Amino acid sequence: MPERYIPRSLEPVLERGVQEFPAVVLTGPRQAGKTTLLRRLFGAHSRYVSLELPDVRSAATADPRGFLDAYPPPAIFDEVQYSPNLLPYVKERIDADRGRKGQYILTGSQNLLLLEQVTETLAGRAAILELLPLSRREIEGRPGAPFPWEDSAARSPLSRSPAVPEIWSDLLRGSYPELLSSPERDVELWYGSYVQTYLERDVRAVRQVGDLTQFQSFLRALAARSANLLRLSELARDLGVAVNTVKAWISVLEATHQVIVLRPYLANIGKRLVKTPKIYFTDTGLLSYLVGLRDPSHAASGPMAGAIVETAVLVEIVKTITHRGRVPRIYFWRTSTGTEVDFVVDVDGKLVPIEVKASATPRPAMAASIRAFREDLEDRALPGYVVHLGDVRLPLGDNVTALPFTEL
Image 1: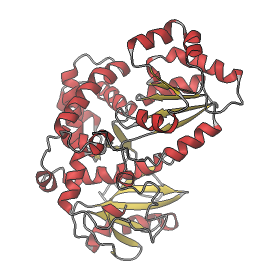
Image 2: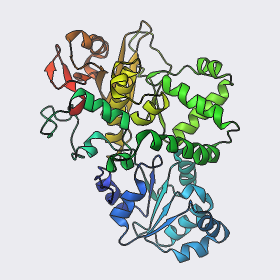
Image 3: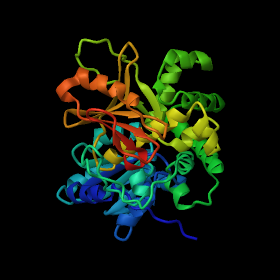
């Protein structure tokens, strides 16, 4: 049975990039759907070549000009970070016919290395876009739906709101296209394979990691700290490794789109604010797998419940903005006395405060930190939201709304 294709909200952005730039660079984690998306949009008239294959990579390395002669534009070069030497020759071809748009589409799953190489060789010649795993908007068939703060009247067009157990089942399954288009796939088996493949290919490609078993222990320890302040020395001490090693490993996870490091919002408001960042995984399914959660009811009642729901809210916002071709500007706000707003979304210089609760019953007390934030930030603060797992939207006081997660 063929896998079901789920339309992506990045599609019009990609098509515009191909029309406006000689090259488009598409990054994102493995299995996010980059190849499927590009073949669907451009496969009928573009040559597709995977540079992950050793013989193809060898040909591109040995004779880059001959390789480009064999695959003239329009061409899609998948996993181009395996052949970085190809990029100067791609630049040479682009410069020979600078007015021609959509000559090359380059993909990669290692953002840091690839963008470093692209910046050096294709500056001004390439649109750089990112594809993350599926957003809820894409899964539910509403990829262009606005955020509530963009359209206060916006509502999910779903005929029904999923029950809380169903939401938890979705969170544990995660948002990788292969798992969602093939519901019969075994989730635990899939993520186990994903982690092993990721360790074998990307970790060794990005940075030399001598002990993969120790790195896997680090992954699980980091997952247990998801949605918390990233205290490097504490994590290093627990693992028995140097702080610089932990920093290097986190940079690997960032480079391969596995985690988001969320910075605090700092403003001159006369208060001491926490400056330590927070860490989040980019997929709730992978996060759940790494902390050993397999059963939705156990996840919902366990100590990681809040962190998983918080992660789901953050990645929905990040995916939606990223798939519009924009850079998300999202922070958290926390004072030295412990008052905290989970997320602060910068919207054209104004700030939307968002609190996340794993409860299905919103209460006015849940809005206390948003009220404190709005008092401190004054005219910079927009109305805030308490995102919860229930199905009611209702006011929780002045300029604070309880918002179902499914309407985010």
